[in-house]
Length: 415
Image 1 (spheres, helix red, strand yellow):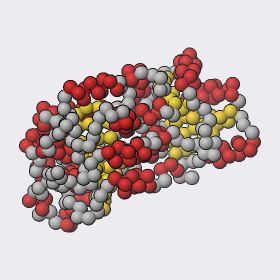
Image 2 (image 1 turned 90 degrees about the horizontal axis):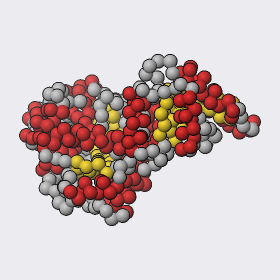
Image 3 (image 1 turned 180 degrees about the vertical axis):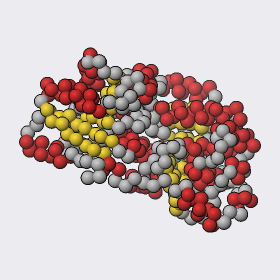
Image 4 (image 1 turned 30 degrees about the vertical axis):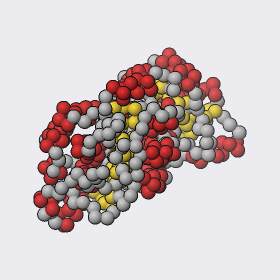
């Protein structure tokens, strides 16, 4: 199986170690690993196939490469395994792998169902964003993609797979594993495995699922793992999946970001909880762009809370597992656009929500783990990306012994 799709340009080869170090220092790029390739500074240095080069120039709008592209493309095009950690949210992860993935699909003849590249992502929204990017380049490259994600009908996705051959599959872990267990699809022909937003998928509890999927892919594959934060869990997964890999880090890790999140417990009688919540909204939702996510325990609590807040004149929407895909999308569009400043959601439904930058988070129902204010699995990553914010928990009055465990959870920024 061909793994090398990169021939170093003479301009890259002539770049001195001092020039390379200066570029990395200026762009906050750190690298680890054996024989790390020299970064490319111009698109022509990538020596891409003509059709891909034209597509890449269009995608870049003929602008400069990002630091992520400059350092990660040579690694990926050489067929090396890669762990890329980008603390700079302005540089989307797909910048690191999409062009190398398309190059592989163009060079490598597809077999069976056509699968060459498998991209695992945390949510349907992320998958659709990547699919749109691939579709924009299809007229140049001929590479097509398909989404296999939770939140859409299984039968519809299987029908799409049967109608045509797709070189790139974009999937959520749970949906793909479900298809694999049912014997509906095979991924043994995949030669490039990409985990986009791996830290987020781990926070959603997909570690075993990711390992199970990787075990079915051919062992001589190339694997790229991309994350927005460095953690022990990401490191452990990388050690399991990658061989002789290069690690590229963009930007600096915000140490102890959780310490920059202010946590406050509000204790009140149950009949007064809604009044206290409304008072809280009056305090924190002062600017047009201010938004808050409210976590409740059950689907019925989502509906009840949304209804009661709407009666009081608040722009609020809700999401839970029983909502249809279109209902969830409309709710998220309203929240992201600012039509709704409040999103009420269950912890389970949060696994399918791309919350973006939200400063305020409220646990309206007391967290199951009273020892500390936990972030829901999905939200924990979003908060780390923001770096600062306020998390509050509304709790009914409880026995003094239990309250003594709750109240120490109060934490101030930098405290």
